[in-house]
Length: 293
Image 1 (spheres, rainbow, N blue to C red):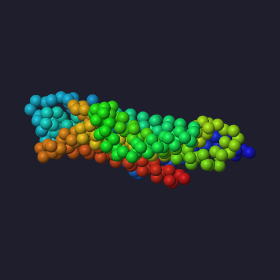
Image 2 (image 1 turned 45 degrees about the horizontal axis):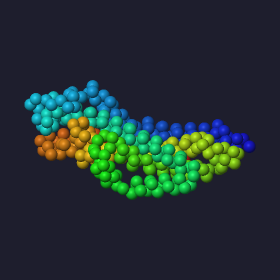
Image 3 (image 1 turned 135 degrees about the vertical axis):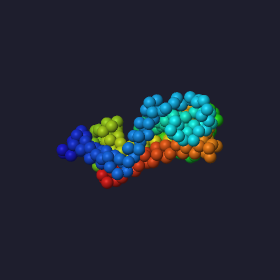
């Protein structure tokens, strides 16, 4: 009887299990690939947040006599075709990308979570949402981005909308699979038999069990969002110039790579490091989940 009581109250059964499952994921971020990813991400985020302090020049400042200068003491990544310091624009470009991805992906996660929870209310609603998600996922991301840009025009808001729309069905399906899995567990069945309500079960059992898979997906989605933003800006359908973005800087610098290779390689390296850091974090958390099972 005490086991059933614990299933309903969640004090011993869920609380202890939740703590055991959360601990490996947190430990994973302090060693191996998790630590490497956390350090790399921390360095990039710090560079973006401290851009006004670290940047030697304003990102839009046009410097007299500094046209396409190679890297040197005064300009560590050289200058661009309109006499702007590439390092300063890269630092502020990091800032732009971080704002976009850390707004768009959580927005997609929130919408996806809400959609998955709504789907638990009625089977027809769940079926309708799944068909809508199938439709969204059928379009390649960049094709969807080009189509939306044709309607709404390029800009930061368009990039955020594209990323959020792409990530919503992904997070919805992650949570939905957790709901279907947890609903079949014996202690959840016991709690339901003893009169536990739908929302109580979701809050007490489903969401805690979905926290780690959602965490893995969050890191993966953030890395995808960095790529999508960079690709859109590279193609000219993302952040509007003269605002700096990493993809936009790579696009602008390609034509001048022979004169100043750092113009391209600097921002490109930041994109690679960001994606790698987030992939390492996702890999570490996913590995910890497998070990913790």
